[in-house]
Length: 294
Image (cartoon, rainbow, N blue to C red; front, top):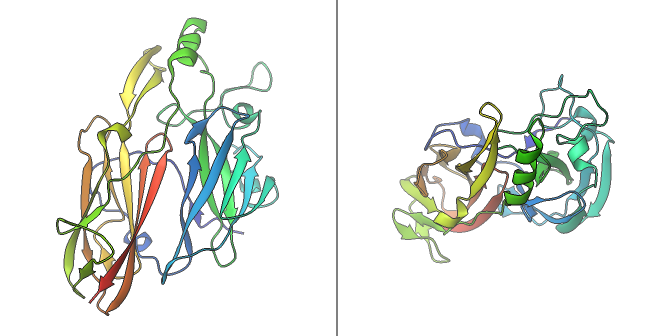
């Protein structure tokens, strides 16, 4: 079975950068995002998992079969998860729209920097210093999808003093929030209508508090530094055409608003728009909007 939908922690690379245009229009059942709450936990703690399921007709209510991956990704594989996680290297959690999962006690050894024995090389963190427990979601008629729960692990390759300071001062990530969606400057609500076959501007934003400062170990300078999260909005719609699939704001850019152009569907009827806001430490939030094309 091929993994056609890999949901990862994304780092902003510039505002309104054009990406693969095929991804934005939902023309088949898809898992658009997997949310973990809290966004980051220590091994042994629990997270609540939910999936944003969408199809050409709007939101879908299918309940995924959830699993935790148990196989680390070998360096020779270029997927986000090990190939074995596509098969049977998983711990099954059950089938539900919302489910609670306990992150394994050994997650920092399987997916983080803790080594099984002396002489082994620690795993590399992501660009923000983070490590992730992969989570699999499978539902009939949907491509297999993966989300990632960020796990708090100890520092590797740092002095004892730095490692202790990091452990004491580091604050776990929390999921961001969105402040809504506007079309041509007017907030979207239950009465929102758009003209068919017409260009409109979609705009969304997030509170300044959603862009969190975080402690980061700079391996080149061998010191702890404070950084701020990058943010990225993925746009999805059931019809028409979106100018970009995603809009991103790079680290330390104070911008908290992004926009794109939606060429509305040519045919009258209901349409749906979804937003997925991700921070660069793996946190995310989703929003769903019904739009009348008349």
